[in-house]
Image (cartoon, rainbow, N blue to C red; front, top):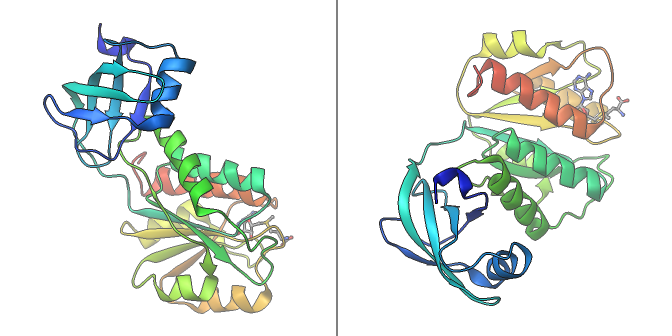
Length: 244
Ligand code: SAM
């Protein structure tokens, strides 16, 4: 069966390599056997974030257990751009949207931040990881972003070191995002999106004064937080990332 017939792509933890036998776990076995009705000999693609992408053949295809054996190396491992998304959690479905789109846009870390006006202080890291894995499987990434536990904005900022911040600042008369990023140049970056209520004035002032923070405008309209995340990552990727 040619590679293009292998429609299913799964993330696994196990090492991948020539003839490696990879146990797929109960959920994947159920999905392959019961939902997709694949049997022994069917081909799927595997990646683990370390060993590139492999074409593999099902050697066992039970509803509870499945094993795939790596056959051909398809793509070598390649890094994603070093850009993190710092976002204030919003409503659950909109947070799910942010996670899915951020993974498709190639972020290397997902970091929920709690700000003064963050509406939801609860975000489930396991749900974020599941959404991130499914998005990575679908969009043909070779890795998963790190999904971090939510933390207060100040402690996240304290851990950023020299990483620059694309501070999406809708009220401060900031420069157009592409111009500001181009002038700041490449390197490790974090994109920071505020909550639906926006940053509190003292948070915005603290960010504008922070060395390495680059306030940017995403245009004259106020975008919802989920729209702003996609728009900001689009500008970052096309200016400094792997679309450039
Ligand atoms: N309630 C806030 C207000 O009226 O000022 C709007 C907050 S907006 C819904 C959520 C976040 O998206 C903002 O904190 C900001 O980070 C980002 N954002 C939205 N529109 C933006 C724009 N035009 N330029 C830069 N950032 C924007």
